[in-house]
Image (cartoon, rainbow, N blue to C red; front, side, top):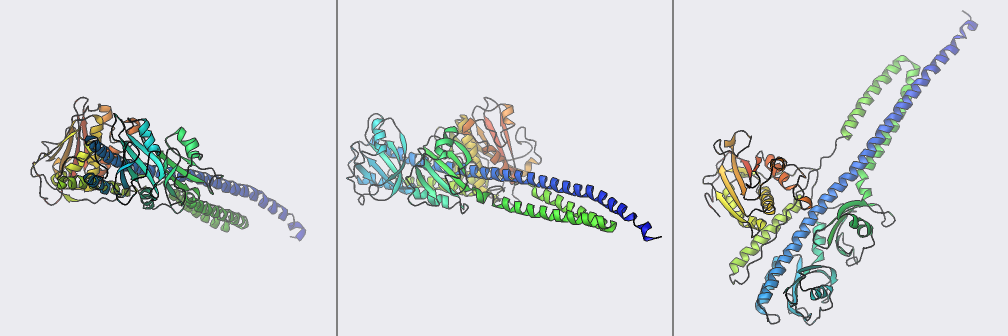
Amino acid sequence: MSRRQRKPQFPGVGAAARRSRAPLILLAAFAWLAMAAIVAAFLYSERREVRQRAERDGSALALALEAHTVRTFEAVDIALEALANRLHETPGLRKNDPAFQRILTARLEALYPYVRAIIVIGPDGRIMQDTNHPFAPDEISLEDRDYFQAHLRNPALQRRISGPLRARSGRGWFVAVTRHIDAAQFRGVVLAALEPQYFEALYGSLRLGNADSLMLFHRDGTLISRHPEAEGRTGVSFAGFPLFAEQLPRSPTGSYVSDPTLTPEPRLVTYRSIPDMPLVVALSQSMDDILQNWRETVIGALLALGALLLLLTALVAQFLREQRIRDMARERSLQAEKLEALGHLTGSVSHDFANLLNVVSASLRTISLGHDDPRRLREAVAVGERALVRGTRLVDQLRTFGRRQPLHVQATNLNRLLVSGVELLRQATGQRVRLECDLAPEVAGCLLDETELEVALVNLLVNAKDAGAGHVVLKTYNCSEQNRPAGWRGERPASFVCLAVIDDGPGMPEDVRRRVFEPYFSTKGEKGTGLGLAQVYGFMRQILGDAHIESRPGKGTTVYLLFPRAPATVSAGGQGQTA
């Protein structure tokens, strides 16, 4: 065969190659564009999820700080109310009376470290009693202070919380919490000077990001405290910022991204206005820090897309050369698809976010006045200190988010715990609810976490009080087939120790009873979070126990907490007692 005769075959082969190349290139381009679109959609969704996660974390932290701030100011207000009642009952008390000075000092020690001074101001604006006496000048007139004028104009004004003020004694900034002495006529005010640095230290213990900040504002926009500390910013008004000018008028809680023209970088601001107090807590997070991991994911995705493009180009070139290379390219493509599917599966796993414990505010009972027995005073102060320690431990638990905290489960005697903690539990119910313990003898040892049990009982007691109960009984017994909780469907009742919380409140209908353990389900409206009973149920299930509720309208409510029995017998101290 001559060369002239073979020559026409080459154009046909080239045309066939070009015809097979075009669809393959188009298919490869379409595949890459589709992959790019999928990756872009994933990155967009992930960015939105990252921001939402940051908002949820910030909201949970702000909620915890709100609860702590409420407890702090209410503890101060309770102490001031007790002092005001004492002053009302002892008119004509001479200036800097030594006996009353000792009472002030005891109150100050109970409120340490967030109160640095307690002062009694007479109706003329002069200091009558001062915990700083004799080191502070007592001839200073406070008649021109806004808090004094507010009580002077309105003697019925019970409590007032000021913005940050400079002490005239030269001791720096403080927040004045004041109460009137007499509602009928103006006889002066009693004042507690709160230390802004206490909140700075508290915020500093929360291990925020390097660019994050926590702030406490007065409702008028004045900065009270901030961490990290901004020297010279305490007392500065931020009323013109969007938080006060735009966000708070629309909603008492929320999140927004700050305008980059007002801050060096965009920031996610989460805030809560504290009900019944002129205070606002705010968390400011750097959007650059929030999106740091997401940006690294974007870079990785771009590199992967670039690598995929190069790989597709190489595969197309090899496919056009010979079938064997195309087969090898197909095999690598399948492997790449498997890796890609694995990457999507791994990247699509969402981070579960655990709901924070909604800290229930429990006020310290007013310490009985008119007694000279120091033992009773020490016991009352000890109860208050223990409540503060428990509250601090709860706030510490509120520092980690998105993972379940480990429990300290140990064999414990339920009767002993209730006998030792009943006084603290009575602080949760208040004086209008009668709390009794009906502890069965020879109660078996059970497995539980003591701190979580105390939190669960406080939740249940506060719920009973809020529902209108006047009498609550804590009853313990060894569970069996004969005395198993009514309506409980659990198995092996003899393997549990039961604690029944019985109240005489109004009860609840069946449709409400069935949902009370659901997270965020609440019948208290805006006052409730729907987390209390869900937390109780989660705690009981985590220790392999169970919880059950029986209630009918007009018949009260009984909450059964069933704790797994300990493998070894634990002494039933405090058995058969009724407190």
